[in-house]
Length: 364
Image 1 (cartoon, rainbow, N blue to C red):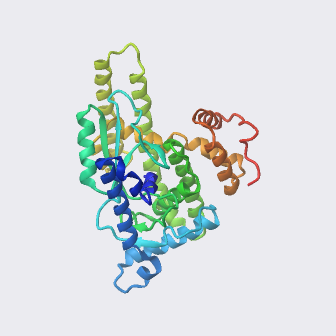
Image 2: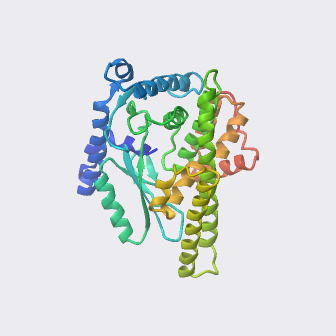
Image 3: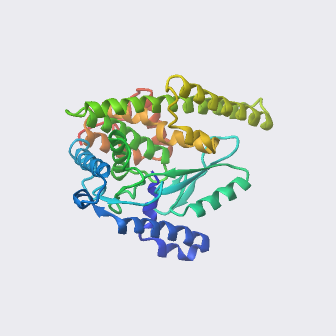
């Protein structure tokens, strides 16, 4: 998530001449991240401290196991990331602003040095994020402010474990760490959907392997129960996005009619969620926060960033014989293509069609 924060390290000086608003944005990003780094403590020190809460100690032990597995089994970067812990004393690490037109799921992009254009703008300063939300809403866009528990600096700094996610169940901790480390392995400037879908594929593949290890049967059962709910939630969102795209692309509907149908479809989505919660989930309300505010094109559009191309990457993993080094090299080759060629390669993978010979999975 939020991997554009790599731009904040070492480039603040370069943007000083770009104007006050630009300077203040990068300043809050750079100082916000550096403050987190300065407060991070070695995990072993936290575990050994007598004052450490037993639950925190247990979760940090899981992190050590997850981190070792990420290197040995998944071939992810072996560096200092997730070997320290920082208590942020707040619910989220950063806040992402996402925006879209009222009649489209196409997210607005913000462009930065090094990372290219990304489909969100992130802030350590919540008030600054809220100010941008207000400005975008006044311009007539659908906008959502989304709290983010973790982000990646793509290996530019050693990202610590944060209090904003350390209380997650072990399976969710593994997902998150694998996801963020995957960003350090492969990152394509300017293609958020590619980057996030790749990282999501790695996290899903990795957590399945981690939970299949001896002694983790109880953790796996806990994880599968939650993951089934997540998939049901994702199915609701996916169908709503399909229906909304059909509405927005209907040339026979006027703009006002599209907005009426959009509102009706979003209300139906809310009703679908309430029925799912009351029946299959027996009142479990884990997604109430998601449905509680900003349920619009911006929030629904974000789902596509993380999920649209996951099937393609998993198909490529199969073609690579489930060997992570070969898989990563193949992903990097596709990532080096032009935007249009990269999209064609992804579509071919989803359709189980052959890739061009130079893109097919070879030796690592």
